[in-house]
Each structure stands twice: as structure tokens, then as C-alpha cells.
Image (cartoon, rainbow, N blue to C red):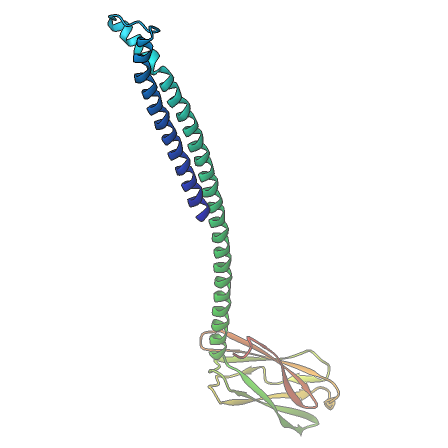
Length: 246
């Protein structure tokens, strides 16, 4: 903007100089014209006689023709300067427009990043809110008992989250254990229920192995949380939770 103002001032000064030069030439020309005619007549170089209107027109055209040509030339230079000024002004405007477009691109990029960040934050907040509305079970070992040659392993599932409308229990296929409790009834917060697993063919639980137990629970909105527990040495440990506890 400062550069454009400087160039505009410079072109205005150049235009003023041309106008001043034209006025000076005009004054000098009129002085020479009106002072030269009497001198030429006095020395007999110029003869004055009555003239018709056509002759008067021819005289005026001849007398002021050089002055008109001078102003024409000055006007040509003035138009050239104005044209160059207009071209440079357009170039400056194009440059400013390009800078403005680049700034707009940067602003769009910043806005897009901010929008993505807002979406991510909202998704996290939504996920956290959803997580708080879902059941969450804690599983702990409850010992075992033997009846008729078969041993039953008991685990207590306690709901410490939102109310659970229903829950499904699944045990990873293996040749040692059989799940006896496949469904849990409605459990409000802080309520608990036992899950029972029995051994197959009277074999004892191999405590060196790991067993995976999956528990899927639904809240009153039919939203599901899936939890996986690894049982080793009779102790269940939470290994995965989807969605995670917020």
C-alpha cells in the first residue's frame, strides 16, 4: 500500500510538471507571437492587408498550429504516463489479491484444523458420555466347590456402572471348562451376580493355562459394552474394554 501511494504521488508530480511545461511554452509562444508580428511588420518582413474570413481562418490555423501540436505531444506523453500508472496499479492490485487469496487459504486451513479438533473433542466427549451411560463389570474369583466329581468355579460379576438391562457371558472354546452361566439378568448399579464354570470329564483346572471370558452388557438404550477377561490361576483380569471406561 505504501509503495502504491508513493508511485501515485510520483505520477501526480510528473503530470503537474508536464502541465507546467505546457503553460510555460504557451506563454512564451504568445509572447513571441504578439511581439513578433509588430516587429516583422516594422521591418517590412510582414505585410498586413485586409483579409477575408477564410484568410483569417488560415492565419489563425497557421499561427496556433505549432502550439496545438505542442499540446498534442504533451498530451501523448501524459497519456503514456497514465497508462503505465494504470498498468502498475493493476499489477499491485493483482499482487494484493494474490496475497489476500493466500491469506484466505491460510485462514481456511486454520479453520479446517480447528473444525477437525472440535469434531475430535466432541467425539471424545460423546464417547465419554456414552461410556458413563453403559454398564461396567468388575469380575473377581469366588472360589470353587466340588459335587459329584465335578468342580464348579465361581466368579462374582459386580456392576459398578450404569444399570445393565441384560448381559451375555461367553467362554473361549477349550477342552477343559464348560460355561454354566450364559446370561445375567437385570443388574442395577452396585448389584452383582455369580458366573459359574465347571470342568469337563472331571478334570481339574489347569492353572498354568489362560482362559478368556467375554461379557457383553446392554444398557436401557440397547447400547453395548464388551469386556474381555483373562483368567489365570483362578484370577480374572480385565484385558479389553470397548468402549473404554471414560
